[in-house]
Amino acid sequence: MKLKSQLNNVIKDAFIKAGIEHTPMAVSEATKPEFGDYQFNGAMALSKKLGLNPREIAQNIVNHLDLTGVLSKAEIAGPGFINLWLNPLWIASQCQVALRDERLNVSTRENPIKVVVDYSGPNMAKQMHVGHLRSTIIGDTLANLLTFLGDEVIRQNHIGDWGTQFGMLIAYLEETGEDASVSLKDLEQFYKDAKGRFDADAAFADKAREYVVKIQSGDTHCLQLWQKFIDISLGHCEEVYEKLGVNLTRDDVRAESFYNDDLAKVVSDLQIAGKLEESDGAQCVFLEDDEVPVIVQKGDGGYLYATTDLAALRYRAQVLGAKRISYVVDARQAGHFKQVFTVAKTSGFVPEDVKLEHIAFGTMMDKGGKPFKTRDGGTVKLIDLLDEAVVKAKETINNKEAYSSEEIDSLAKIIGIGAVKYADLAINRESNYIFNWDKMLSFEGNTSLYMQYGYARIQSIFRKFDGKIDGEIIIGDDLERRLAVMLLRFEDVLNRAAEDASPNQITTYLYELVTLFMRFYEQNPILKEGVDIHTKMSRLQLADLTAKTIKQGLDILGIQVVDKL
Image 1: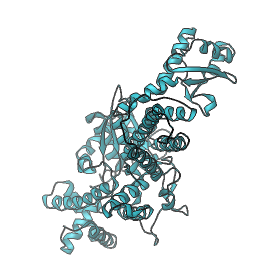
Image 2: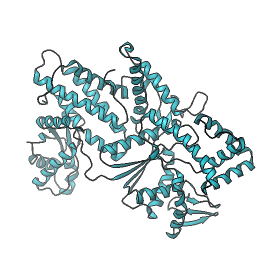
Image 3: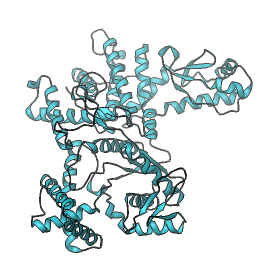
Image 4: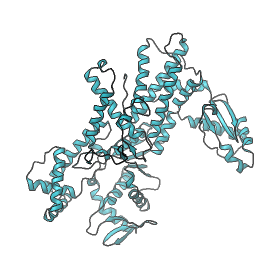
């Protein structure tokens, strides 16, 4: 449920009844329990406009608040804050509704839109490395979140498959006479060897460029070899995606080659729009307050990344009909996307009402604060990192004798992969973060293992309880109230995270929820002898709603729960 919307409507009604014509500001969560559940501080902002004392305005609003439904109490504090307490009966009834609903009473969009999320973007003819991890995880979470909220999400995996490297690979293949049906590991070494020849031999480099032209002109033989290289590369990517538990498939791939036929038209349309200027033989778009132009065609007739990105933007806006296009790409590309977005909008490729956004993220660092590398300074292969996560997770499992070997393997995968993903998502995406195995596989702190343990602990309660759960939820003490209100805030958190494209808002919420439940569990016995039946049933239902909320939150993050740990 949209809890804030409910409260804003109550405040709005009070404004109308009080004869205040100005639009009220939104309520915000109270920072301390003694300040109520929510606060409204709009009275101070209105004092200058109305020429009245803010406490006088606040009192007028309070006098007209409905305290028989959503709210039970309102108090004026300080210079004009209004502290608001939710009605315990209303809280209980809303928790009951959420518990009975498979979506936990989280509504879908009233006006859903079509959203393109561009993420992952692995390199072809190479193994995925840790540099692809953040884009893949953040992008998949954003796509999951928007889908859950009701938008029509189109996942796009933009890969570079149309460059000089493929001419180089084909030329080297023909030179060596090797079989094109090689594994990716072999292909990577094959690529290094081909690159060595390309850099050392000008005649070989010219031949490689000729093959690029052949590929782009549709030469059957070259295209067959090119397709084999692509298939081998994508096969590896799919193996990584399966291990990582992300929802990218072969159907989501939109490679550079997909837009190849539109590149010449992009340039001609920019020319018609009067956007192009020639500079040193290249066709460029010069932007105001930007010294570096956007080059869309080189002097030799070749196209650049900007040209393909403009073609992709036009396709996504005009053909797919997207109203929000999100690029999950590292922060170093901020300048590029700012320029391309400006050209796309000013040239009419993308309508003004389409939201274009660069979902920027920082770099994964080692404990020394340097970019994450292998011990010998090489690039860390993503699949090796994920395998290591599973191995280390297996070491954290206690009471191994209580599980079969198959159960331990399954648990280790869920814990290890979850730990890697959660550690990434738990920080502000624009920040760099330190990759630390000990921290991410800890049972304490804001980690996936802490969330999984919280969920498993609730499941253990239900394994011990033998009987049918019924009756009403009863809001008793302050801790019970705070837990229930936290549960009702779930939809607001999801909507805010979706708007800001910030998964860390979800992880922060889950951490606070689990921490609060742990306190509730310790101070408010559920199955202990002496607890009356009505209280027991109420607390069992609050525990059940907490577990369901944890599970749904982790599911959006692409992380599984476990029933026992």
